[in-house]
Amino acid sequence: MANIKSAKKRIIVSKTREERNKAIRSGVKTAVKKVYTAIEANDKEAAKAALLNATSVIDKATSKGVYHKNYASRKISRLNLAVNKIG
Image 1: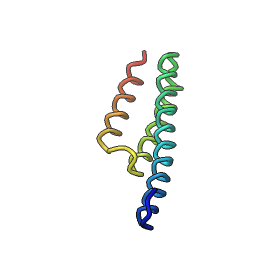
Image 2: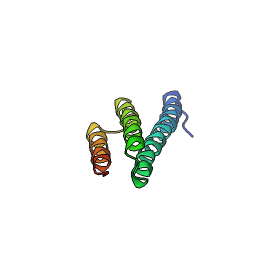
Image 3: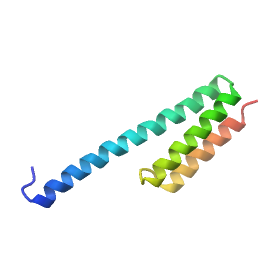
């Protein structure tokens, strides 16, 4: 354990940020999973609704600095492509 006050604070802050980032990443994974579940079921309307939600969640995570903007863009693009392939 650290002895210096600033080092102790850094440990607390990094732990807090780690927990926050983990929760946000988990939310993104859940949203993406819902899109793919709707695609598997061939339900285009549900897939579009889930895609809209997933896009929003990914954008929020990116604005908070959890994901890099290129990663988020690629993720959204691939989801869009998958939803558009539904017949």
